Image (tube, rainbow, N blue to C red; front, top):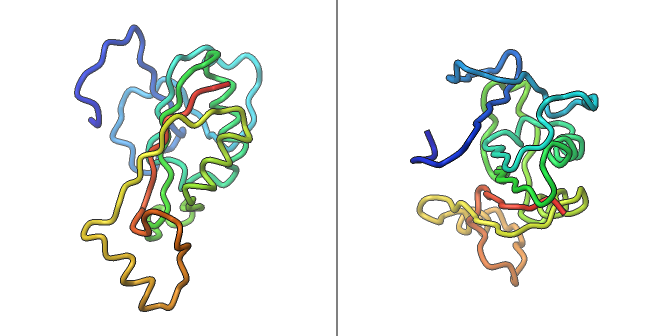
Length: 158
């Protein structure tokens, strides 16, 4: 639903065996990104991976990134989102992590990806800076925006 159209030969969907709110009916592979996989998994050799709105549920982010790296072809592309500021949401017991732009970049680069683009998602009304000031937080003065709530990153397998 997030894409208008695209020209692909094959489109596969991977999800948990018991996803919490999946509306997708035709899941091709049941995968928990936190786990280690055997060499015979059939996801190897894909050109592009979209990992959208998933990383807050990952408790083993290094393994998750390594898994996606291993499934991609050489110079394959990963589109991935990282939440930064988001309330705890359902299922509460599966909601694990939040990431800064710098933490997400480090996670990807130290696990075999080249970051090509980072697009911040900003808070509506850009009022986080006011909240930080009221709480007497000390944001980095040389950082461009303190209203980021998430990031979508395009990265390429090295």
